[in-house]
Amino acid sequence: MKYVVCATALLASCIAASTGFAASAGATHIPKYIRAAVDDQTRPEKDRARDADRKPELVLAFAGIKPGQKIGELLPGGGYYTRLLCRVVGSSGQVYAISMTMTRPMRMPEPPSGPNPCNNVTASTMSASDLMLPSDLDVAWTTENYHDLHNDLFGKPDMKAFDTAVFNALKPGGVFIVEDHAAEAGSGARDTDTLHRIDPALVRQEVESAGFKYVGQSRVLHNPNDPHTAKVFTMVDKTDRFLFKFSKPAS
Image 1 (cartoon, helix red, strand yellow):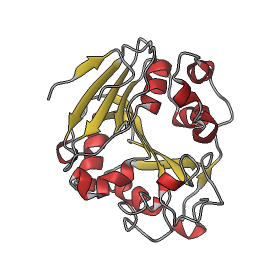
Image 2 (tube, rainbow, N blue to C red; image 1 turned 90 degrees about the vertical axis):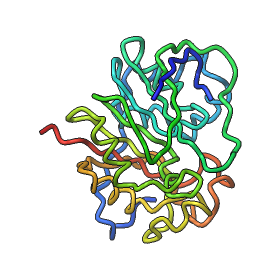
Image 3 (cartoon, rainbow, N blue to C red; image 1 turned 120 degrees about the vertical axis):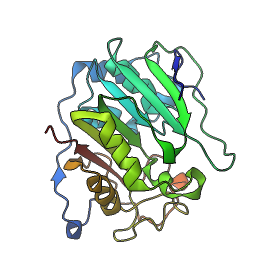
Image 4 (cartoon, helix red, strand yellow; image 1 turned 30 degrees about the horizontal axis):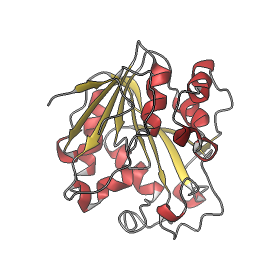
């Protein structure tokens, strides 16, 4: 597998009580390096226009992203978070943006044009069934795309094998951040292709089955007005989203 270093932005509910999830409070302290990354006026206007709904400063703070980290970003899409992660980790860190091959052609979001100061992004594409990540990662990260891995478009990989590959790539104590669109409680993977949503309980079950410890969740992206029955494309950046943090045990 070949990695190519990129200096551009990127190539190419409240959870129901019955799930037993313990909700974590959203992060309130925003480190200066996260605030600086979000406030950077060289970020594309298209990205900055989404900040009010995506709340990147709170998401990044909850995740614990900091300078010098090695991050594996899975399914980066149009690179909204790639362009933030690379700024936060800085010149002493590295972001590995890993896209997945698809079984049929599909138009993907294009990275906004404009200047980008990051030269610490390595982009690659591979099959989800053959996921290979750099070793000793501090963080594995995926936002609004974990559900896609349950669909034919990405080959429906064995999710335990996929999550195990993520687990093995992390250093002891490393974290796996999963943010996605919430489906109705108890729906499992029923809506991953039709509505592009997934049951948070299924995500937790799958990730924990690979050996991860559930650390907690942030509700900063919770939207109580989302009925969980609409396609996410009709509620751009306004769906009810869950934000989970898992960790690889230190020993």
